[in-house]
Image (cartoon, rainbow, N blue to C red):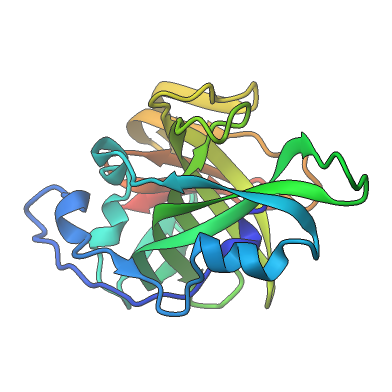
Length: 253
């Protein structure tokens, strides 16, 4: 699965938040956008069949679970909003909400089935999926991350109609390159997916004298180029991160 290849540009939505109310992410989403330059699975099949793949299966069309949509509270912030993160010394980093999108698109992944008549070709499956994405960038342009909620068909049997929803955080390292640094299955649904041994969950977690609850994190230290660590919960979204120097920065509300 190569998520980075299939990150596409869509329209933006803005949704204001009353400072005296909790975020209600699902209510902020608006109407889902179908990407205007999007290929159908049938069109994708006609382009790549026999060039790369011996067969392309249509795995179906899937929407996010309603519960998963509640895991993106910062989607309710308007583009241009500055989110303040502070370290233990009182220094701050301002992350600007650059863009956000709620859309459907298609994605294709290689299938484990081999082609019987050509050992050099592979089979693939294509599916339409729903996703929510928000891009954040520090005002000094040294940190740019994309937080995405999306879904994935079952790894073991992608044609079964079984899917799960996940959160992914990517950090941009060059103009067209991103490195994954956070992954968590948030709604398993009916699939066989589960979080691996690098996934971390905290009932409560204190960072820089602030306490957060039901916190998700992921240890990507084993991956080359992965320098940051993120802490996320359903209530506030990206609540904190540890930078490449080991400094913790937590969200100030």
